[in-house]
Each structure stands twice: as structure tokens, then as C-alpha cells.
Image 1 (tube, rainbow, N blue to C red):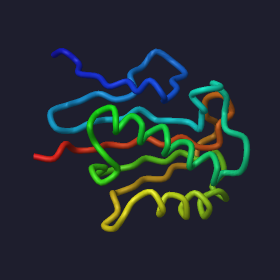
Image 2: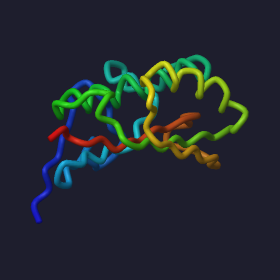
Image 3: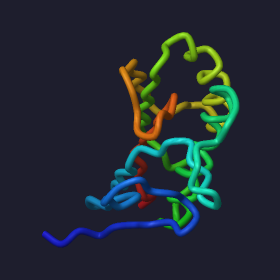
Image 4: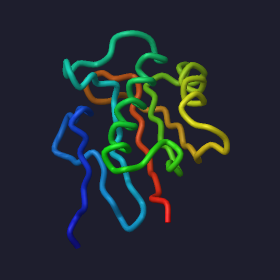
Length: 127
């Protein structure tokens, strides 16, 4: 099987992976941390700022694949501090319109480069 991958020039990566991979009509997006693609550094600020940057990076990947946030079917959120859940949830709600995609939120010990949040998602191409 040959992989059909998507890489957005304005979304940063911190390792040897593609931003997203197609499997049929499904696009599996790698997790994005709050990296600023211009500076290559984590966005400074609170969890709201970091959450916004994760979504900005992911939406650049969706755009590069010809998709939009309306095509997202599932989201995985990883937080290093579950007390950030409320603020993350507020910003999350601003990114999508109802009906919202399914979501899993997981608390974890640490993330690359000291990020407080990482978000990955799956989207579906419209028929």
C-alpha cells in the first residue's frame, strides 16, 4: 500500500512523520502541539493560547488536504494538567459548530518540547 500523505508548509513538525495520511476518504491528522511554525517555538501563554495554536496548525493541515473543520469527525486531546480542561473546552467549542465531532480527552505525564496540550483529529472527505 502506498501512503498518500499531506504536509502543510505552515504547520510545524517535531519529528519524522507526515502531518496527515489518507486512508480511503478518511484523513488521519498527526497530533499538533502549540508550535509556531515561523519561530519553531512553543506559543507562550496560557492553555487557551496553546489550544488555539494547536487548532490553527491542524486547520492548516486540513486546508492543505482540501478539507475544513466541518469535515472533522473525531478529535483526541492530550493534556498534561487536567485542571486545564475547562479552558481547553471553551476554546474547543469555538472551533466547531454543532453537532460537534466525537472527542476523547486524555491526561498524560508529558508531551514533546514541554507542551501542555497536543491535539490530533480525523476528518472525512465529503462524497
